Length: 175
Image (cartoon, rainbow, N blue to C red; front, side, top):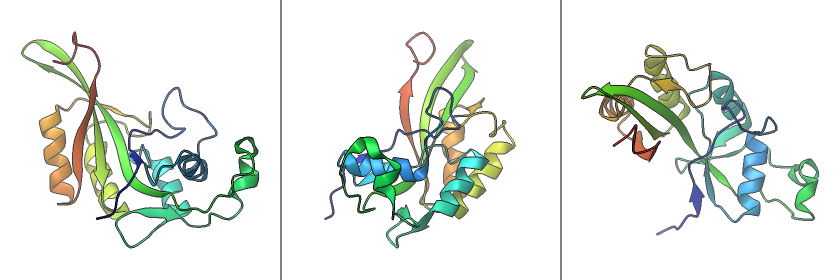
């Protein structure tokens, strides 16, 4: 069985409070430098970021994605020293949804990470989510969906898509 070192809780430059220098190439380089074999794309719900993912990566045949052209990574990131990047880091399509909703007379706030098996599935899910809220406003959109409803939308999109609770905000808002 293959083993992976992974980080799926990632954001793009389209999310608030993130580096504007974030690109798929930089994510792949940093993942490789830190010893990760798989990194989430983060923010596939944002149309601009999904387009970058689509143009800069290709499926690798295992359900993961790799950089379309990993050549030239070392000069792009000189502060990582003489590390010779191989382009071995892979991507899994991920996004985080900030769910804010009322239940039992209380406001609830939960973050969930979504996983999509393909660009087609991500686009299909985005079409559903865009009917609920604005996906262009932030890489981590705020939607008025509870986790169960969001999970149902994810599973209806593709049987290989799934949701993992990322974290609650604070006990005051979430549990």
